[in-house]
Length: 129
Image (cartoon, rainbow, N blue to C red; front, side):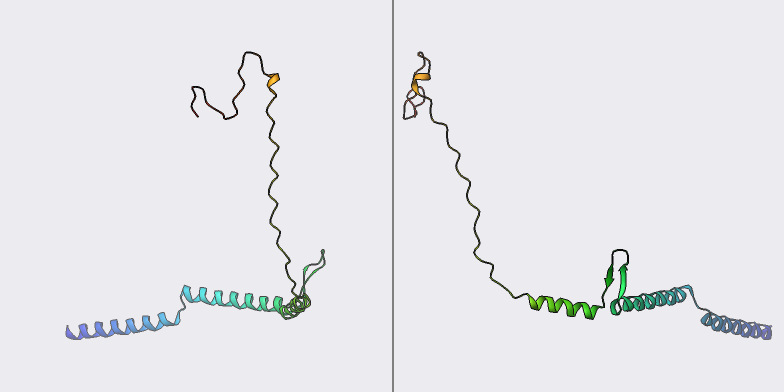
């Protein structure tokens, strides 16, 4: 019985060692996805490098051409260096709106006979100011 127990323990240890060694040699899903992402990134970087360093058609029907980035920077630098700075000149504030002419008071002759004419010091009825 002791010999059978020792044989079972040895078989179990051997089987466990075999499974561990096989598990290390099998690539898992995360490693496969990581390799795919790295390949896609490398392809994207090479495509971007090609676009940034070579002349290419952006829209052939409109005649739009892509210029390498180094050449584009040289062209922009030359354009900016050719434009000399100049003063902005005086800043003129907007003119204030012209006041609207007020309507002149009507002559006293146009008021009816029964109504009193307003006093020049604008008193309220009852003698209050």
